[in-house]
Length: 48
Image 1 (cartoon, rainbow, N blue to C red):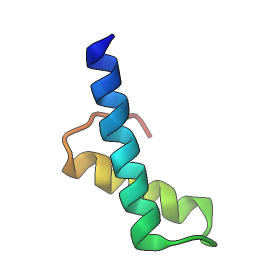
Image 2: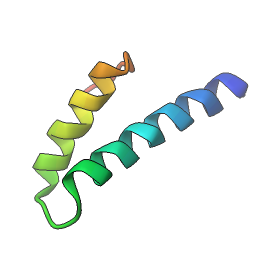
Image 3: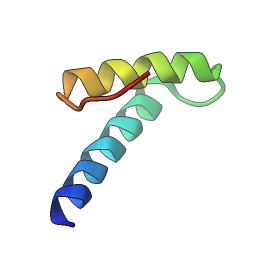
Image 4: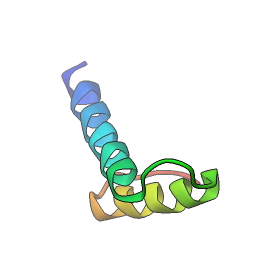
């Protein structure tokens, strides 16, 4: 359970970073691309 909590925290940190940098009002595709880049930079595997 602790492992999952740490991963969830890291993913949320990435999401907050994306939102802080891009702000509100963009298309979902812009946030998706930024989130994928942020996950990649933080070595968090994902499937797009």
